[in-house]
Length: 184
Image (cartoon, rainbow, N blue to C red; front, side, top):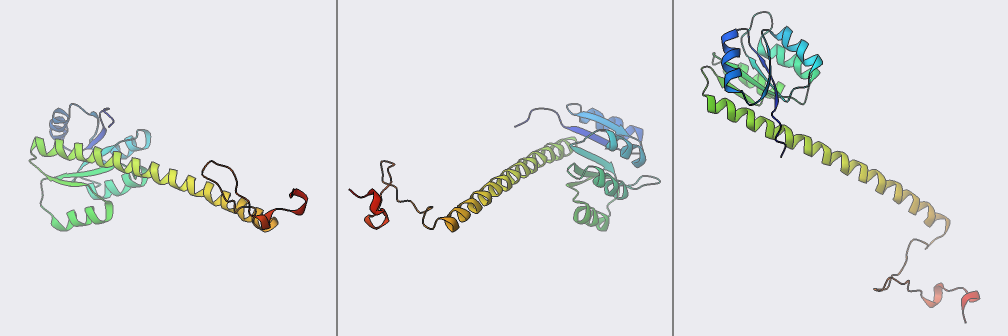
């Protein structure tokens, strides 16, 4: 497991909330933004593992921000923090934006720390799965190429790819397969 602290973007229009989150998340690499626009500017220059956004912000709410953020960094884990219980917005955020957690203000410090830890764990698992899927695709491509070569050989010389191997690694040949030139 990777022991590097996650790179986290915190977006909230209230400076006191950003300070409080920064204190709670002191073991992470933190970047803060006071608006969705500022958060998007950071997203264009710095890769983030997790983005934590306030839901209600002026000019651009958390959903709109995360939608635009997701277009820039689709693999970052998304978390929304809100002081408002809006179930429909939460459902939309989870279903359309793949929001990982919806945390209510005031938050419990352990809850937010747990959400970030679980988010980082999920991101690592998704990255491993992607790497394994890429490896499987590469292996499948090699197998397909080898099968194409074998088919071409078999078409050119029927029976050439059907070899009878003995347990010691030698080739077992049937009498019928041996040319008269090689018979003793």
